[in-house]
Amino acid sequence: MVNAGSESRGEDALNTPEWINEEFFKCILDKDESESVKIHKLLLSSGTTNTDNYASVLCRAKIKYALCSQPNQEKVRSFVMKTEHFEEGLQKDKLGEMTLFETEVRMYTSVLSMIEAKLREFGDQTVLAPKIFHSSLEMPRNIVFEDLVAEGYSLINNRPYSLEEIKLALKKLAKIHAISYQMAQTGNKEITTFQKTYVNTVNVDDFIILRDGVKLMKKVISDQPDLQRYISHFEAAEKFLFPKVLDLLNAAKNGDRSGVQVLNHGDFHMKNLMVKYVDSELKELMLLDYQACIFGSPAIDLHYAFAMMYSPSMRLEKMDELLYYYTKIFQDTLHSVQYQGHIPTITEIRAEVCDYRHWGLYLICTLLCLNYAFMDGFNMGEMIESEAARLALFANTKILDELRLLLPRLLYLGYFEE
Image 1 (cartoon, rainbow, N blue to C red):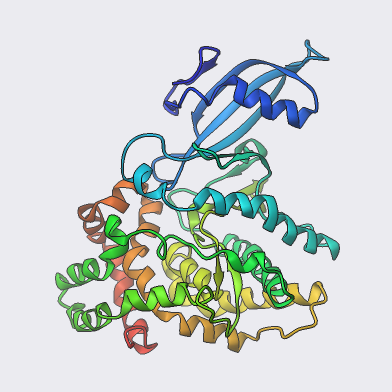
Image 2 (cartoon, rainbow, N blue to C red):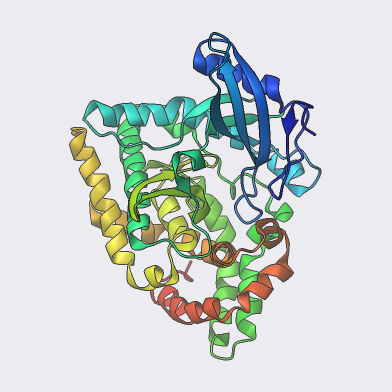
C-alpha cells in the first residue's frame, strides 16, 4: 500500500509496497533539482496494462511539488518506475533469479551513454533510451525513468507497426549494433560480458512457452489437413532445436568470436517501443527495456524482430528490404565514426541470419503467437503461462493463414534441417 500522503485511485490504481512513497521520490527530486523540495501530492498509478509487460512491474508517479526556495511556485513532474515483482507467483519466484535489473542498470549507466557519446563525437544526436533518474540493485531492485507519456510518446496498441515506424526502430538498433561492433573490435571488454538473455538463463521447465513451442505447433497444425505434411519436419527439428538454440546464444560466451558480433537488445519486440507523433507525423521513436541484452550475432535481434515486431505482410513481403535497410544503417554508422576496420557486407549479414535460422524457427514456434496477442489485447501473463490460451489464440485464422505461407518458406530455406 502507499503512504498516507499519496493517492492511488481509478482504473489504473496500483497496490504498491510502502517504500514507494513521498520520501522516495523526494530524494530523487532533491538530487535532480539540486535543492530540497516539498511534495504537495503524489499520485501513483499503473505504468502499463496487462497486455504490455511481464518481466517487471511498472508504476507511474505524478508529483506536485515546490522548491523550498520558491514555496509558492508549484511544479509537476512525472516518472515511470520499474520494480521487481512483489506479489507471490511465477514472475516473482523465477524471473527474480535472472540478472534483468543488473543488465539494464549497466546498460543505462555505462554502455548506452558510451554509445551515445561516440555518436555525439561525430555529430549524431540520436537518443537511444529514456533518461534514467535513479537505480538500485539492492532488494527490491528498481529503476526510475522519465515518463515518456508526459513527453508525448505512446505505445502502439491493437495494430501492427507501420513500415516507417519499423524502419526507425531498425535505424536505432543498427546504430547500437554498429557502435558496439566497433567497441568490441577495438578492445572494449565490457561489451562482451553481456551473456544472459531469457532463453539461455531461465529453467525452461518453469516457462512452458519456451519449452513446448514445437509441441504446440504440432498440435496446431495437426487440426489443419493442408498443414499436416509439416508435422514430420517439426518432429525432426524437435530432436535438435533447443540444444542448437543454446549453442547459438552461448557462442560468444563459449569463445566463438567468428562472424559479426554486436551487443543485442535481446527483447526487440513491439511493446518495447514508444512513438511520438506531432500533427500526425512520426517525429521520434524510443527503444525500451534493455534487460536482456546479449553479445553475439546481430541475427539474435533480427530474428526476434521478424517474429515479434514485424507485421505478417512485412514477414512475407518486406524482409529483403528491411534487412538491406538495417545493414545500410549499420555500415553508414561505422563510416560516420571513421571506423577503419572491416565493415560487414550485406552478404555477411545474410549469412548470420542463415546461420541462426534455428533461433528463428524456435522464436516462430514459441513467441510468434505473442505478436498476435499484442495486437489483439490479450493478457500477456495468461498467454505466457497458459498453453490453453495459446492454443485458443492459434484458432485465429489470421495466424493459420500466415503459417500456410510461412511454413513452405521455412522449409525451402532449410530451417528444419540440422
